[in-house]
Image (cartoon, rainbow, N blue to C red; front, side, top):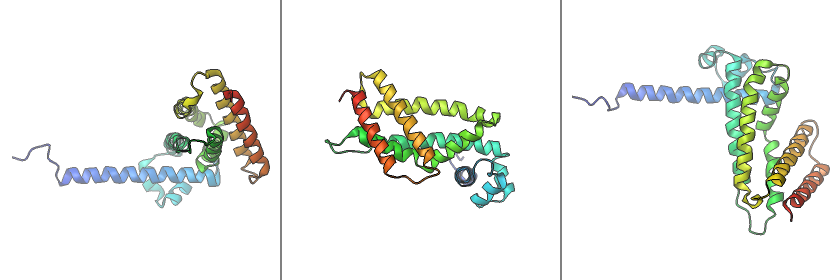
Length: 210
């Protein structure tokens, strides 16, 4: 008698269908994020997302019944990808004599210039006048900030024991870098941006007591 735990054609087919469904959902979510960047939140419709994903609108709605369902999945996806990208950027090996403060500033600058940040910023602006979107975005953003803070603690152990200064360093870096990234949406990065980043690194060194 065949053991019920053995896999057979039906089990394999079920597993393949689940994998295919997950892959399709991922394509839809990635397409939605790309649309937020290219067209803005208001210009992103289910029809536009389906076209970007290479699916019929009906096929897409089978996986996500409405635009807000896609948005919810996209926000969670952005949250996860931004954290992974931040940790990866901050954890890159550096020469022993490297200026880790300057490298950290550059890594965060690269992070906020990525399309993922643009997509998140677009959603943040739209949420100002959209209570349903704000309800989705707020808890995810709060979770991101908590995990971002802990990640920064993990990858910059040299700040151990300088809690208040480290908090200020993180806030200063975030507000300056995000503000510059938003400004960069309407102008090209230039020497002034480099000067501000260099000055920020100097201030962070002062906060660390170097």
